[in-house]
Amino acid sequence: MEHTFTCRGHGLILCPFSAKDSECYRLLRNRENNRRWFFFSDPISREAQEDWYRSYLKKDDEYMFSIYTENGTFLGGAALYHIGEHAAEFGRLIVDRTAAGRGGVGTLALLLLCDLAREQLGLIRLYLEVYEDNIPAVKTYEKAGFILKGRRPAKDGMRYINDMEKRL
Image (cartoon, rainbow, N blue to C red; front, side, top):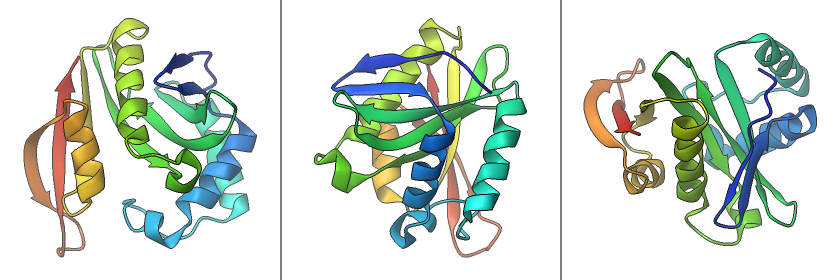
């Protein structure tokens, strides 16, 4: 959904996701070391990403954000989706570690998004799903205050998914 929400802090800017950002996000997401952590892990073509972006703009329960440094370097993206009256799902977090030049950017971006969700959207709870073996992501979510609510087998039967949530 097109939106105007923006937040700043910790040397980062979270702003509305653009068509240009969508292509940068696709390239980052398609890297082998990143793809394997997404529930849909196949490479995404430029055309498929453009189709996804057009459909995203039509949704009324989803906000996608780009993550930038204060000097304008694109670092990645994150989303709030399935937005309801009091809760939303968090996901699609990806950060270009090379461009970030430091660790912890995902945690800082998530904390900014939690503040935005509470203060500007009036939400009281965020929830997410993450592969249990995605240790960097699990640590990021724990540092941002998410707690484990459940664990279940993934569809492939080889891995587990953690269900986590945070009260805002």
